[in-house]
Length: 81
Image (cartoon, rainbow, N blue to C red):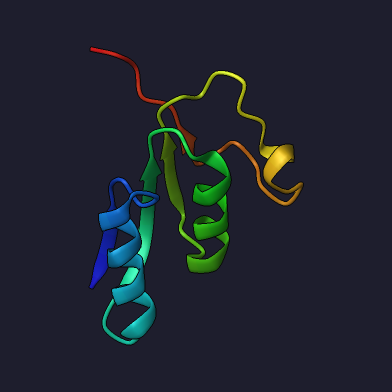
């Protein structure tokens, strides 16, 4: 089952990540999001090889700070309503 995990870096999101780790034959994290923990989000993106990721507090975020292998093409920024 393909999963898009909203709030992946929070406590419930980390519990969901543990379930995905425990049952990789059943679950695949294809998308991850975080509100303000870019470093942890990028760790999870690398671990799960998620194709899509969204980071809410985009201002000041730099992919190079999380590793030069990342690009911006699949990082989405949400805007306040």
